[in-house]
Image 1 (cartoon, rainbow, N blue to C red):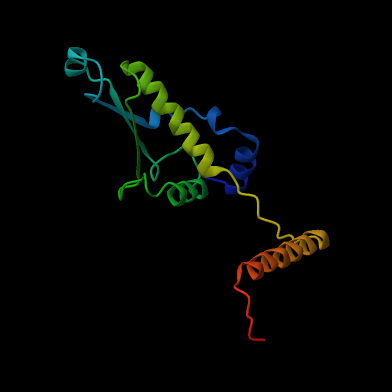
Image 2: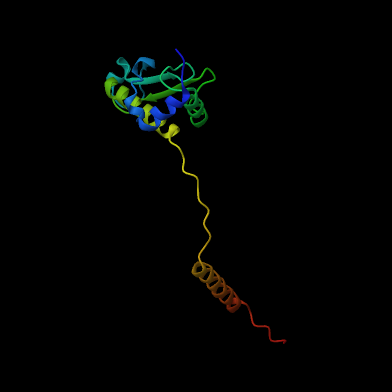
Length: 151
């Protein structure tokens, strides 16, 4: 089976990242959470860690992998694994949902194309206003000086 990158670009341009089911490629690990909870927090593993192998993913194209690796380099290990954790809630299920939600948000943000900035020039009125304000400021400073009586 050959992989056509043009087809990928067309599909991805039309598709929302949330329509891809990443669940089979996500790995979850639970640990004990810090924070409030009393005895409960010492017994139950409510903190959820999410791992996603960016390099070996079959669901995203090579171009997307490069973009994710570039944009999320501070969250990706040397092995190419994206790491997220959540311990907002006392519930493991809620923390898992939160981690998955944050995962999708990160991918959306990383894969979003940035609009190029269009340089604009200040208007004639804006230039005149700036110069007028500079002159006013200069006059104000001049008024603060001690008078020179020797002239």
